[in-house]
Image 1 (cartoon, helix red, strand yellow):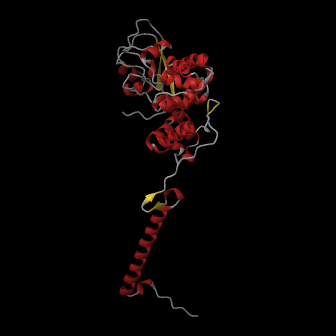
Image 2: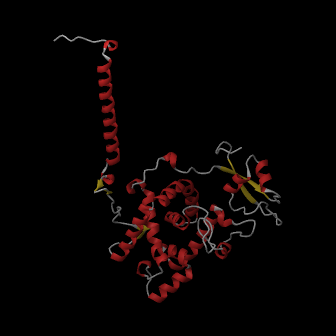
Image 3: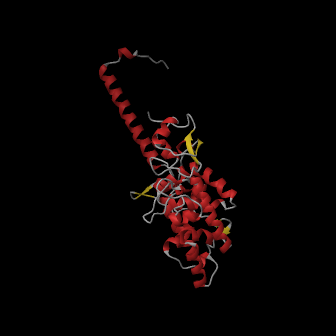
Length: 320
């Protein structure tokens, strides 16, 4: 067969416009079809009568806290656990932030727990207490571990108008470890120890005596403490394997550890802003890396040695 090739420039403008119209229409259809595919691909996002499919999250058949088995065969325990899996799987903003912050703070917390022979699962206790941030509750509980002033001081933290070491992640974790070791010495059980961090050692002990049991899962407790262990366990499973619960967060989206070095100070700092400028940073950076400094000055009459963190050169961008 013979074909006659027509040069582009010889095409009649009428036919050219028709062909251009077909090409434009085909392009629009292609884009719309791809948009429909993107919006509807995957089982979990397929609409049903205008609604998205929503699934009950996966719950492993075997769960534990600090190596102590969770008795899921008990229907009340299972439903308590399931509630926290549901809440924390679908509480997207909190859980995404917990995943991001864990990448920064777990490497700080884990070695301290290990050094003190506290099970690694207790790092998830800090997640549910504060969301891994220096939060302050209406009752005045402060820091990653949400310690009230009396408890913080009991376990060796300095707390006053200028210094509050509940805001120091390393020191407050050490204090939390001291509390947990004391509680475990009494209860000989990590689950009860964790519950006591919420309810107090005396509070848990009183309920064990009153209810004639030595098992956390047999206790009738206030709602907060009843949910406490279940929430730790749910967040432990989600943070261990976020993709299993629908969280696809790339490594570059995780919050990076803060690289710093310490400057030891034994004397008074008349103005922390000036101190920061002298060391190549500003007041905000000093406060970000050392939130335990609670005032513009540090009056150190006793000449105590404080370690003030300064970011490693080039590790962050400083606004000029």
